[in-house]
Image (tube, rainbow, N blue to C red; front, side, top):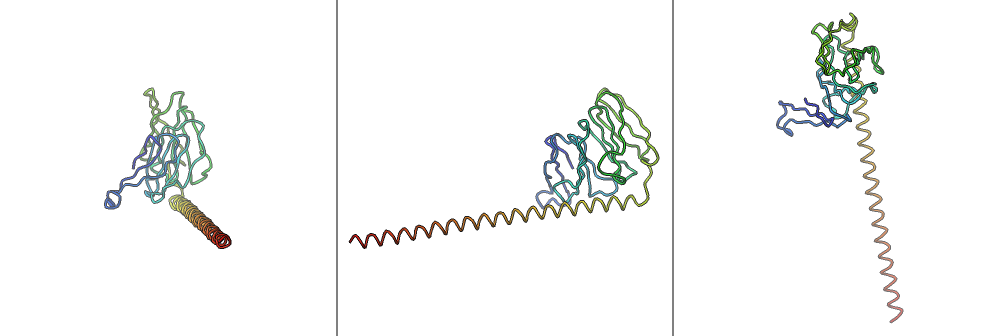
Length: 221
């Protein structure tokens, strides 16, 4: 799975190479390049992309994201999931800021933000036990942060709760997608019907003109 400089996602499925070479191209949803792309470590069918000022959560069988975070104050330069908390992920930005998102408790804003330094942050990774976060900046400085226990230790029923939320948002997005397709289908049928009515009207008018011309010819003779 690859994020491009144009803000698009391309996935290659080696098990499905007979169909379109196993390549899937998702709708372009970011205004800038995708700086990070990573599958959720627990629910692998869901993945996140980080680019421009937002993080987007996707389901692999949908071409549009199921969740989009609010705009960050700074241009995002990277991020990653927590390896131990299924609903937690981290973002870094060009202003030296760190954002901690905890979807298990709230989805409308970051649970915590922290100013790491004045330089733009360029990379981030979390230790396997989820307690230590290493952040690098463009000057080559690495900062090591220790997070609180609640951000490192799995919460009760968190795995099922996050999965239910992702599945619910997936169903909602699919319903919206079906509704949009139905609207386009109805619009196409209406347009075709209007064109047929216009053609029939033109044909009737031409037939009446022909009858009128024939009658005038009979009168003149």
